[in-house]
Amino acid sequence: MTVEQIYTGCLSQGAYYIESNGEVAIIDPLRETKPYLERAERDNATIKYIFETHFHADFVSGHLTLSERTGAPIIYGPNANPSFDAIIASDGQEFKLGEVTIKALHTPGHTMESTTYLLKDASGTDYAIFSGDTLFLGDVGRPDLAQKGDDITQEDLAGILFESLREKIMPLADDVIVYPAHGAGSACGKNMMKETVDTLGNQKKMNYALRADMTKQEFIDEVTDGLLPPPSYFPLNVKMNREGYEALDSIITKGTKPLDPDTFEQLANSTGAVILDVRHQQDFIKSHVPQSIFIGLDGGFAPWVGALIADVDQPILLVVGEGREEEAVTRLSRVGFDNTIGYLKGGMTAWVAAEKEVDQLTSVDADTLKQELQNEVPVFDVRNDGEYANAHIPSATLTPLGAINEHMDEYPDEEPFYVHCAGGYRSVIAASILKSRGIHNVIDVAGGFKAIKEAGIAVEA
Image (cartoon, rainbow, N blue to C red; front, side, top):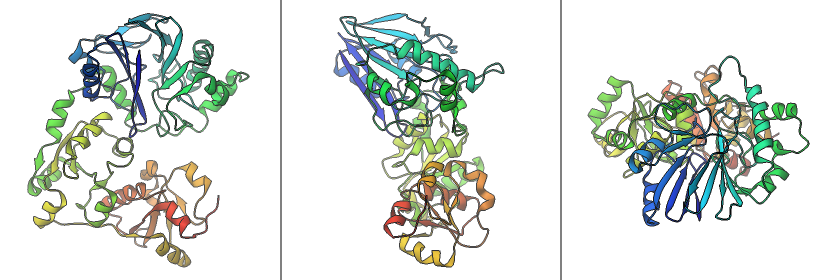
């Protein structure tokens, strides 16, 4: 038996490859199916099942494409209602895979169809659970993402999750391995550990949601406390996962169409496309297409696209480093953004050569900010609430990047002001959004809060 976690850091997402005696099961695959197909081919094995733990909100799964290419059935747990053919497993139903068995444990609460898959080895001993968003390491799935009717609330779902954990998961042996769908950085939970694999016994000891003496009301209160609003694109991803989507190959073909500067500019004007610059932030600072938005591929790319662009149908034009066009389109498609219509051929070099207008972002080091703070300049911190609460510049105003649209009225109209994040990535995103809205008096602080502390600028908690 082989169990392999295929982890994608940008999405903090774990898909799983299980092989036994030439038969393979894939759990929660990403949209690009090539890695699973190639892995099975190396093992001279056949993909027999595709298991989905629930209808994912934070990414578009590859279940449909993988099923089309392999003939393997898609399996959901009870209460699932997909628009395509699938096996809707009953609670406790078992699926034979080579010499091992996968058992469906219905664990509603995160969503009503959420199901944990229990892997039993050749001897019938419980070996591992693939817990989806029901149980994370250090946390559990948030109960406010399900498609709810008027008769069920997030508190109701939290109560259902409490029962699922205690009736289906906590009775399992301590040596059972926990393989969750997400790790730290995912918006599907609050307190996830950076580790991506653990034993159930350790989780029983340290996961607040698995305390043996916890009452149901305590669980509900703690799980629902401090939930931030989910990203706007989440319901759209659920819809795509439930109803279907366009094949990735055609998305890539359309999105990687090279455009000369004149055509690129004409399309931007005629389609209302967002010009998305995915190069490194230093390249964007030096030179970029006016009104373009920076979200770099080398940071938390896909989740920030989803949070800040939100509408998956929005046309997108790319400014991208040479050779990374397909990567950019693929990663956009992972979160349902399928309407990329081309990229700037030759990048900014071609744009400048065509004598097109160019913009720049003013960026200073932390030592410069330290001097300017003596003049009581406005400073805006675009980190999240927790980072700000831990330590911040006393005079800084918190305007988290994820909620930047709610803070537009707080930024000065004419007076120069400074923005910073933790390391310099999010602040450039924020500055690019502000500049696209006509706010050009923004100044980025290079290196973010890390550089601020190193410069000896006073901070407080």
